[in-house]
Length: 487
Ligand code: ADP
Image (cartoon, rainbow, N blue to C red; front, side, top):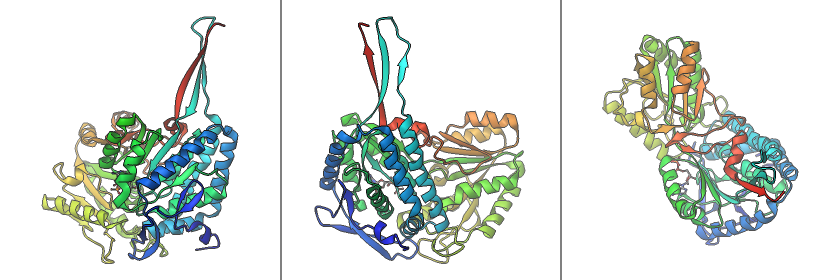
């Protein structure tokens, strides 16, 4: 670690402005997925610690909600600047605990910090409204107020950005938060807390509760069922999202769910094939395919199918270098954990057993451990598990279609609806298809869609709520209508 390393590499949780161990004294190890070596140990907290953090956030909300927007903005700006200065060290820590190549970790730090910068600016623009009055004796005003304490539950695939796009919006709106990062990647979240402390954020405003997988459900339940928590924002699997949805019913809590996707990526015959291949490379192989917007099903018009599969396979073999994310030139890290490897292996096996053809890859990489070969499969049909499930690994499923209508039907034949992509140079087709895709996000001739300026979120069982853009603030505010009579 560089000069700032000592100060951002934390081994305790951060509650009420203090660095704490679990009340039980328990800890759990964090390891590097590239080599299995232990990097550190952090507190294995449980319900009791979570209730303590909720109480701290509740207390700090009393003041934070009344801190003028301009000042909240300054705190966020300072936090952003400190992250920016420490970006190299945060990126190294992220690669060590998550496995993603350093170049991607650096990009995530810039992207994740971008949300703090963005919401520092949005904090000053949370406007209310004055409505046209219904009679001359009344006026009507709508305020936007922070909802209160929010629980933020985040996954391991983007250890920083998934947290900052929630926390920065919440803090900008005047909410306080209790964050519970994934067990695989708590160190990045603690690094953010260290810099929040350095930025002078008042105690209790931003709390980070760490735990192993063993206590994840208990902590989630405590956050969902607490009457002192006004809202939950979760990014993770659809299965866990559904549990949280149910658990929030008892207290009628606000909820934002960013769940799994099953992104179609369509290549129409008018497309520039090389550009479409580039689009797949960008959308599929970032984080070794472990993103919820990764293209899951690549649908290619039959007239260009063979040409496309050949070009894609060639590009993969030429461009992708698998290895330890800290090694120079590596652009494909290991899968993040054992569960991921088992899942990818089993989806590929199921497809092959049902008739899929392996064009390249199809097995664990020769490096062993959690490394998997970049893979291209053809002869895919809708009965295969991989057609319906998010693969979350470096596996491309190439599927033929005949007509535009067939492609749209296949693309929408899923309960998920996060991202969708297509490549076409037919102007009318572009508008038609963009409107018909049942997803919250559409990339047209573009494989990279996430951006702080844009609303990120899904439809169907991919969830609801939007993160980023000015819409990101909506999840953390309610509208209060005040009418003034007798005028
Ligand atoms: P993945 O399969 O990608 O790990 P999960 O939905 O299991 O996705 O995990 C996302 C986050 O949710 C992680 O921080 C995980 O620890 C947490 N989590 C898992 N189960 C629960 C639960 N029952 N309640 C709350 N959080 C949970």
